[in-house]
Image (cartoon, rainbow, N blue to C red; front, side, top):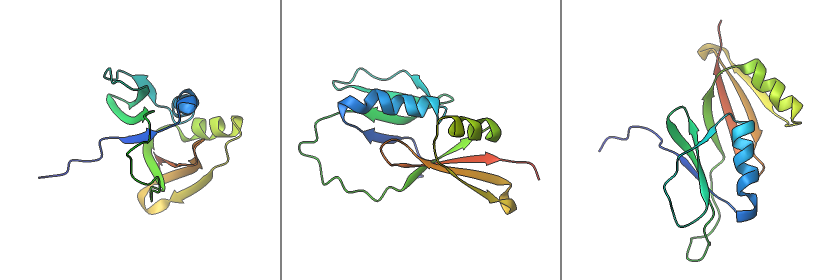
Amino acid sequence: MANQGLNHINLSLPADRLEEIRDFYIDIVGLREGPRPAFDFPGYWLYAGDSPVVHMMHRPTEGRGPGTSYLDHVAFTCTDLDETEQKLERQGISYRKREIAAFNIVQLFFHDPTGLGIEMNFQVEN
């Protein structure tokens, strides 16, 4: 077996927060809603390019393991650093900026409405 990369993350959310969290990932993170199979539970698939990278769903929690997770954040490769910073500021979203000069990368860190960390990586010129 050869692992070829991360396929998607899955967010299991309360039904009354599905639209709120979907809108955040569309409006702030820059994903778009796309096709999703006709599952027997509500949810959305959000796309980066042609790939459904964030799956959102609501299913009853019966029979699931404990809700504790060590997931700290998810990271996205992005473009247009200036526009993204302006959008975060307009929305009143606090963020932290880090430059990694050796790799020509600028990173923005913030949280989604559920508290999950979001990292956005931007390739910059020297």
